[in-house]
Length: 193
Image (cartoon, rainbow, N blue to C red; front, side, top):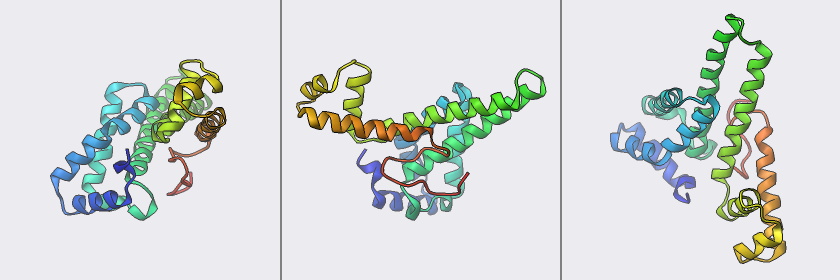
């Protein structure tokens, strides 16, 4: 993941896309398609719709590579935000049809969008957080280890395990904020919602 966050790599990729290098699009897709698809699927809960969002996001950057500005943050974050926005838009369109048919209310739609967005942000935050924090959280939540047991499994002090768990939980708590996925340690960028 170190290369994913490299501002230099991001600038070079944006320049290559601007020159119309098809190989650059393939490299970008290979690196980030699972991230984009995963966010879209988490929001939409539908494989085909997530595939369409993935195609749309990569199609957009191919058609308009200037839409991404490396000065505003990592390409990974831009793609994640684009996937999130596109997936939420599709979810709202789909749910609006149910509202018109009388199967749901606008309030239920917005609650569904909020819940799906928070889940997608949490997934993004976990995948983007540093490995040591992610490992500590996985031990605590999936393997039901307390901080002392996690410290032993990780080969660190109990204080260090507690610190990692606390930081990981702080990052996860930001998943309930309004807006798209934001990488750990970075302020959100782009237009406010």
